[in-house]
Image 1 (cartoon, rainbow, N blue to C red):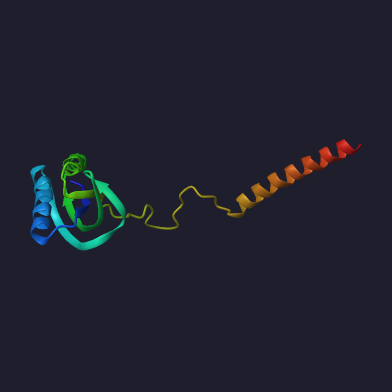
Image 2 (cartoon, rainbow, N blue to C red):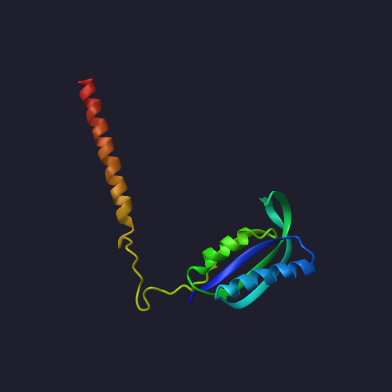
Length: 143
């Protein structure tokens, strides 16, 4: 089961209503076969811009991060379920992948050119070809 992180922005709610909304969100994950690994409340903050959801405008919200494991179909199901929740302003599910270096020994090559001056030489040769063509045309016109 892959690990996911759910970033949810709830309406600016009081503590009891916020806990109920978070509990609803977590029970959705558990009902669909997910395992909750951790949760972090980032607090109530002003939104970066005015957001509209469910026919209302919002200027501030409660930010919650939930780490969970689940099936690959779980994020789409969860997204659809949270879309209908009136307390949720925004929701995003991210995969929580760690970066693994592709080559453990020696220099990593990702298809880049071995000689970085090669691009400069190619550009310069194109420019000089253009310039020589221009000079030829100029001589032909004057002759």
